[in-house]
Length: 415
Ligand code: GLY
Ligand code: MN
Ligand code: MN
Image 1 (cartoon, helix red, strand yellow):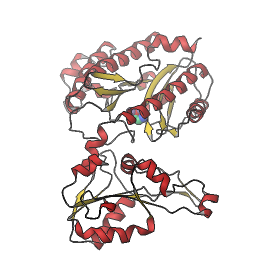
Image 2: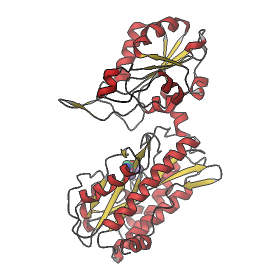
Image 3: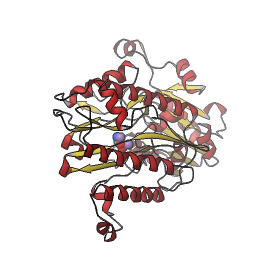
Image 4: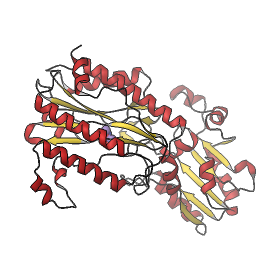
């Protein structure tokens, strides 16, 4: 919160809203998911929360203020636990806590002492909104009520801050990775020919919840055989046949932090020699790419370098030829036929976390490394994905203890 306040111009206030509760059906909402910026700033995971920052507010009581949905005996009986003011104070470190009904009055009493109002909206460049969510409604509301203030975007400040993880954020990500590891080992022991993809999915969620995870970080991919060539496959309803490889992409969510892991395993417990050849090619690219993830590397340069490493592997596998490479279109290099997605993304409160695409990698970033080779004509798709923390002293693989080498995978499956 202090880091955000420091980046506001003088005489500025900033307001962050909780996410909407989205309807799921006629009588239910989807499980509530907190706005990532509000959670990052306040640690409060509760609907209808508002955070107001006004570092140079003439009234010192209103420099950091949290507004909460007022709980009562009825809510306690039907919905259970909601923050009391005292609990919210200790969870957030903010001493001025009010109920939501006081928001308009308090804002009105201080807003004319500010020149600028920073408002938040989702500027994650992977997100294209089609639903008129709370941030957008709130921006309209503020602009019509206080039309002569200067409005500014809070998102560029959050983008810079959220990319650099604190010790607590790293610890929570490590915990999400540890739960993910245990689920994967469980899957290795459980998988055998004839099993259904959803039976494996059930094993994964069992382990996540058993260990206090809040669920999947994203819809899990359990893609056997040909299904691995559908990048966002998540029907997870097919039989895993002997001789096929299953591509997994799953991760635990823990305290709103995420793991994002991919592994590819042989249904029968042993890779064929061709499968192993492709597996080791992906593994090679993963290891080489990880070495390039260092402080100061620029996104585009990194992805181009990984493309070259992948190109070499695809030539070795006889999937593309040197002639294909010679004649390739630079805007769509030959390797993209078999490796069509990016190699890395930031990871944090959002799985594809909020960070600058043109900002060099830096100490404290957590990124995925996730090369894959997808060969529809062979009914084979292999992706491997680990989560890497960049530090000033080199990077740290947060998934270093999750089985990765082909022989290790086979040993556990056959033990
Ligand atoms: N699981 C989403 C991704 O790997 O990017
Ligand atoms: Mn993934
Ligand atoms: Mn990923």
